[in-house]
Length: 233
Image 1 (spheres, rainbow, N blue to C red):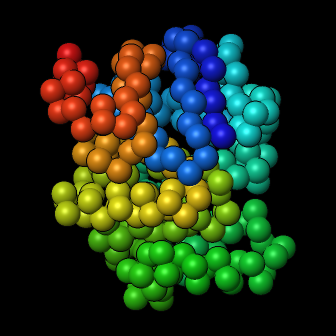
Image 2 (image 1 turned 180 degrees about the vertical axis):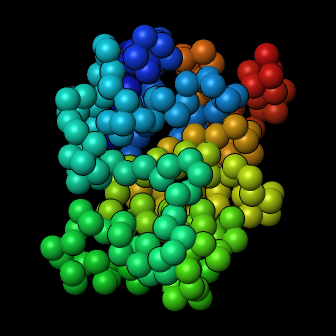
């Protein structure tokens, strides 16, 4: 479904990724785990077309999409929920969702149906559909950001730092949502500093200094000693 193959990328003269490689299968929850500045966000921005690569390949459904624009990738189903939520505070919940559906705007019937689907997946939003997004709690804003991403009809949903600044009980709820989306067929990439995200993962990639230093699957995701060693060094 998604493959980053030997990516090198950065910002101007500042290199960040140094041969970054991952592969994620359809319907999986994949977690990119690492400390701040490890290169996680740069990797997923390269996937989404927000950061240019200098070498390597970005593949989606087996096709090299390295030369595609961000808009083309979104239309193809690669959608990102950015760090910091970035909801439109002066718009209602429903209007925020409407904004997220711009790639599907010519199919009003689909948009209406998808909006109701989002309300079923995220019932807290249904309760607040007419409320201004700026008046929502942090957790509710994160749910809205995810809902807005779903309105773009993703096959791959990247969620950058979903747990940042949220209470543990809300983090668990957000992670359950990510797991449910994957179980429903959407491939989910979580960019996280919170090791608790591995509880819902099918695969975990540990990232440090622009490279993947370890990949865990299955029972390895429950090995607390190894996880602590990989994360803390």
